[in-house]
Image (cartoon, rainbow, N blue to C red; front, side, top):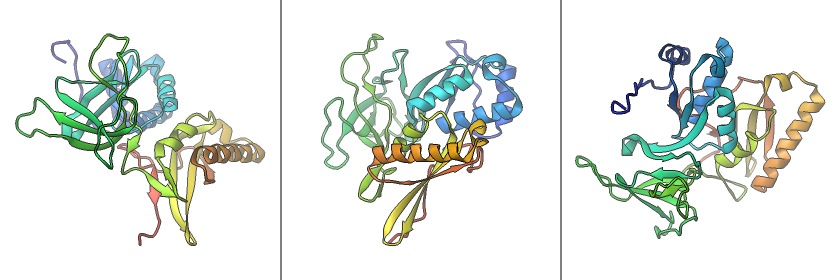
Length: 287
């Protein structure tokens, strides 16, 4: 950062109004945040009357540390008036900086001078062919005090085959689908929260927050998706809300192959966190 003449302002999640003031005072042009916090910031911008394209000088936003969909990327880009790039990192590897998207936005380039990357079958630990999904496994190449050898990240991705048009030769990994331990099973179906988010964020009437509730219903498991609705749509008539609920239910059934319950709720009514979002609440009895 010093060599590039960049001023960096470390600021953890929290006190969002103060962070917006930082952006205005410092003329911030780039932010790096988790996707759910970026969505939360958009709500705080609206609450405080700040219009990012007009009042903030942001040009680029890097999002990482939790899975998010293309629809979420577009929402953040429109709200911030900035180009959004995907990033990947984890605390065990010194935080952000393991991989970043280039302007082509077709996979994240791994810094192969610092990390050896493998994608393995999470069950057999056999290498997966390029383009096929598996668990990301990393080995550090330049750490002396605490090297990590074939570290299982539990993150699910694939190696993007072929060369990148940008000219960089470092391998690329695809967008993180989720973690192997994020997956839950409902009615015999393996479900990843990212499947639900990708569908919901593509519906214009849906707001910025949702929650998946898992419960026992007699001898079976049941899943309820609580979905915030955009302010202007929530004030509409009951018939329109019922049609939206049915449309979302049908779309989820088509994706998941079972029918979940869908509950439409008021905007900003679901719990908010300034750290990583908790999307799945599991109330099922553990036997």
